[in-house]
Length: 207
Image (cartoon, rainbow, N blue to C red; front, top):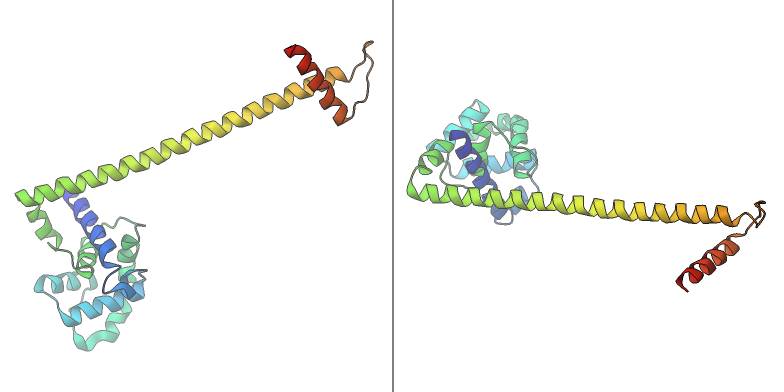
């Protein structure tokens, strides 16, 4: 159950990110990099941070937030890589502290995960859980439909190639027959003559 709730937590954070990346902090979030996220993180904690947010900061960076230690914090850029790739949809992080920091950066509530987990046990939380699961199921169905359409297209193209190949071999066989005269001797035909002869034989069949 906890694993499912964590996936819902991450999905909800990603949904909030899709909204926030076009908002007030567009410059930091729209095309996130480790450097941009690091600078944005400092901005958030410098202006407003709850006790729980400060705990997340301490757990992830192994140091307390201190306004006088900005240069030391700049060395933490690599810690933002899991968040960068998570926002871009490239990875599915497992580090709970990194996930909680991602929630802080898009101002998602309830956070941290402990609070979200408790929230999901309430009636309102269960409604959110069902809605998120329905959204995930819908996305999976869309992906499956894309795969099915791709496979059908491949089959159709394969069929066209097969028909073209059969026509080529029929023409080749006819050309071979036409390259012999009535006595079975080989005769040289031009391409134009071959097509004319094939067309003539086809008309005779129709008549």
